[in-house]
Amino acid sequence: MEKRLDCSLTDRVKEALDLILAFCAEALEERAKACEDSAEWHKRTGEVLAYARMTSLLWGIEEAAKTSRQTDRRKSTYRELRTYFYMLCN
Figure (cartoon, rainbow, N blue to C red):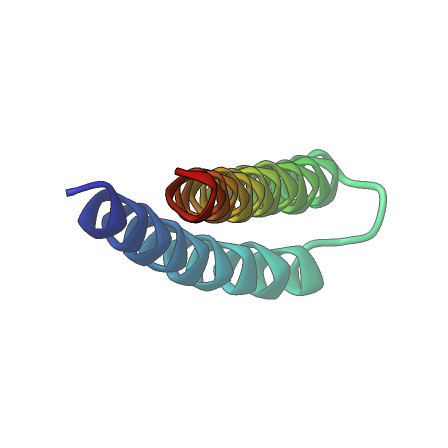
């Protein structure tokens, strides 16, 4: 169940990143059409920066999930070794 949840999270992050990329490309196009230093140009610049922040946040979530999975694997390996050692000693 946990593995499926991780895959689902990874899939959702990828979907979100694809959407962000599409929206960011659109904002960059509109920014290129606007006159430099106009209100529209600044609005689109802010949009692009917001998309960059969302990308960074999603990357952080994905990295935290990877670290969590690695920690779970280490704990599992430790439990298996402890059980094996216990069986050898008894």
